[in-house]
Image (cartoon, rainbow, N blue to C red; front, side):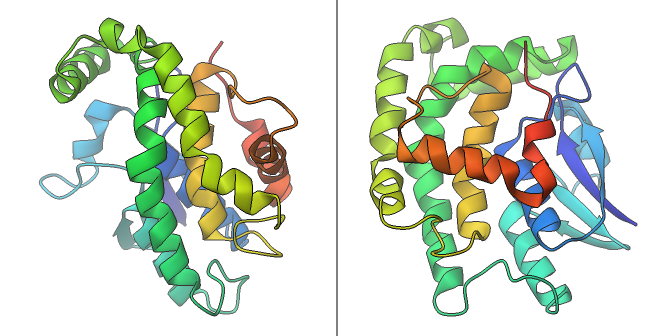
Length: 229
């Protein structure tokens, strides 16, 4: 049995972690059966005390793998006969670049946009933890961060410019077929969509079109996701 520990809100079916979405798409890409374990913020430490601090965590028939990129690499090596996640030539390096770009350029403005929405979807103990930890990170209240929404939306659009330009020439970031390089920014945009309810992009934007195609991948796995009301 494969189990993926998957971050959840007050509603255990609301799964919003960008990193968990990367891992779920990677597992589905490989055609592997798995079940998810809904895990609130304060439940993460119980997965493996003094070892696990974040999710996703994959338990693949007793083999524990942490971190979404490490999970993708594990799947690539453990199941080489399945559809590859990384393109043969330079695919791993390109995905590493995408991971860094998302962390530095895309994740921060999205976090500013949805930080209060995340808080509001958590149960009381998680809300207290989330507010304390994120306000320490930002150096201001969550509500003060939300007041910068206009700046955040502009920042998201600007951050997506390299993706937008690439998708004018290629259907997928990996070229002719999707791969983990696509699932990295897709996970981040799913984070925003699940929590915020929508993506602040016009439908004619190449990124919006690509995102819609990603939703259809793996038998529509992501289209079936619970979205915050």
